[in-house]
Amino acid sequence: MMKGLSVTKSVVRKNLYRDSIQLLKISEEAKKIPGVLEAAVVMCTETNKEILEKLGLLTEEARISTENDMVVSLRAKSKTASSDAMKKIEEMLMKPSVAERAFYSLDTALKAMPDANLAIVSIPGEHARDVVIPLLERGVNVHLFSDHVPVEDELELKKIARQRGLLVMGPGAGTSIINNVAVAFADVVNKGPIGIVAAAGTGLQEVSVLVSQAGSGISQAIGVGGGDVKKSVGGIMTLEGIKALEADPETNIITLVSKPPDAEVQVAIMDYVKSECIKSYVTCFVGGETIPIGKDLKERVRQTKTLHAAALESIRADDEAKYSEAVKLISIEPDALIRMADKISAKLAEEQRYLRGLYTGGTLMYETMILVREAMGDIYSNAPLDKRLMLTDPYKSFRNTVVDLGEEEYTKGRAHPMIDPTVRRIRLVNEASDPEVAVIMMDFVLGYGSHADPAGAHVEAIQGAQRIAEKGGRYLPILAHVCGTNKDPQSLAGQVERLQRLGVTVLPTNALVALLAWIIAAKGEVKDSTVRRMYKEYLSAV
Amino acid sequence: MKQQKRSMSENKASKLFGSPLKVINIGLDVFYQALKDQGVDAVQVSWKPPIKLEKEYEDILSKIL
Image (cartoon, rainbow over all chains, first blue to last red; front, side, top):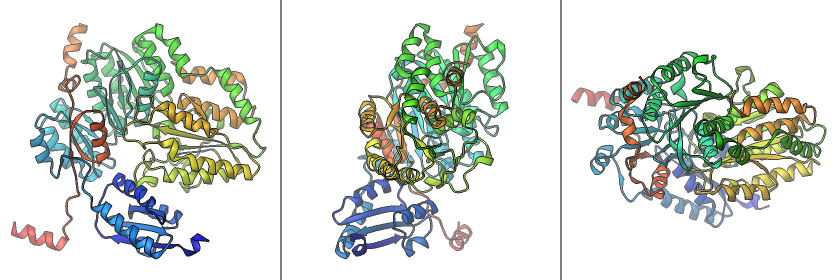
C-alpha cells in the first residue's frame, strides 16, 4: 500500500565523479534519512543500472545516462520527504574527504612526506601508469590495487620496479601485509616466520589467517596481482617478492599462492627457487601445479592443492612439532564431516540436489570449484574452470553453480561485494526460491577494507531466504566460512556467533565448506572412502 | 656456496621490511582510514580523473602550444 503512495525520483549529475566506496557510504546514509524507503547513489554503469532496476529505482533519466554520470535515485514516502532527502544527499556529496591531510596532487603529497616508502594506488586502471611511474622514480614501493591496468603498462611498471629494486604489488592486488600492517583488504594476523608471495588476493588472506589461527604467524605477505603469473608478465614480481623474502631474516618459510601459473612462468619460478634460493618453500598453485616439479626440489618444496593445506604445510615446514596442534585448531576430520553432512542431508527434500556458492573472494570460489568438480562434475560459474561452463546470464544460476561476485560483471562502478552486500543479498533470496537448491555456500571476508559487519549486513537476507524455503516446505542449509581473525576490526568470534545464531553452519576453512557442501548435496551417495581420499589428497601436502 | 647465493639475492625492497611504514594513499580513502586506525603514518591524495577535453579544443590547444 505504502508503495502505491510512494514517490520515486532521481537526479542525474553529468560528469560528477566519486569513488564507489564514497558512494556506497552515501547510499547507506541516504537510506537512513526519515521518509526514505530505498535509495542508491551510483555512477551510471550498466551494472548499476541493472541493480537500480532490481531495486525499483531505475528512472528514464538514469536509463539514458552514461558511466561518467552520477545518479541519485530514491523512493520516499512523500514528495516532501523526497525533496528533503535530495537536499541532504547533495550536502553529503559535497563534503570533503575524511583525511585531515588530503592533498590534491601527488607532488604536494611527496613534498609533505619525502621519505614515503610505500604507496597504495586505487584509481581507475587506465590512469595508474601515470601515477605509479613518478612514485617509482622517487624510490617508493607501490601496492597497486587498481584493476583494468593495460598489460603493457603492468609490464613497464614492473620492469622499472625491478631495475630499481622496488616492489610493484599489483595491479589487481587486493591484499598485502607489510611489517604486520594490513595493506588494502587485509587481516590483522600474528607475526611469525612464514612469508607469502601471492598472485591471488583472497588466497593470501585465507592462508595468512589460517596460519595465524593455527598458532603460527606471518613475516611479510606480498600480493602481486593475478596477472603476474601469466606468460605476458612472466612472474616478474613473484620473483622479486621471493628475492626480498629470501633476504629477510625474519622469514624462514616462503609460501607461494596462486591459481596455476602459465607453464613457462611456473618453470621460471621453480628454476629460480632451485638455483638462487636457500629457504624452504610451500607451493599452493590451487588445484595443483601446471607441470610436475622436479624431484630434486622435493626436499625443499612442499606442494599443496588448497589454501587449507598450504597453511598447515607452511607450519609443518617451519616446525614439525606444531603440525598436529595446528590441524586440531583449523581442521575437522573426514569422519566428523560425514556425520555433519548426514544430519543435514536427512532434512532435504527429494528434488533438492544442487549446490550454489555465492562468493566475494575469487580465490575462495576457485578453491571450491577445484574441490567439488571431481565429485559433482560440471560446475557452472561466471568464472568457470572450463569456458563451456560459463553461465549464460551471470545473475541466474544453473544446476551446480558458484559465482565470484567480485568480478567485473557485478562490480563495474560499484564497490566490491566485501564492502557492498547488495548484489549478494538479492542473489541469496533468489537462490532460496529455487526448489532444486540443496545447499548454499558463502564466504565472509573480514579485515581492514571490508564491511564493518558483513554477517550483520546479511541477517535479513539469510532470514528471508530461510523463510522462502520454509514456505516451500524445504529446509535450506547455509554453510559459511569466515575468513578473519579475532584481531580484525570485525572480530572473527563475533561474526561466527552472529551467523550461527541464524542457523548457519560455520566451518574453520573454505575448503571444509566445499567438502561438506559436496557430501550434503550427494545425499549419502558418496562413499566414506572417497571422502577420506579427497581429504588426504587436497587437505595435506601432495 | 649457500652464503654466496644469499648475497646475490639481496634487493632494496627488503629495506622496506622492518622500517616504519610511511604511506601515500592515492584513491579510496577507506585504505587511508585503515592505515590511520593501525597507527601508520599516512597521507591521502584525493585523486580525480584528468579533465577530458573535447577533440576540437584539444586540436586548438595543440596548435597554440
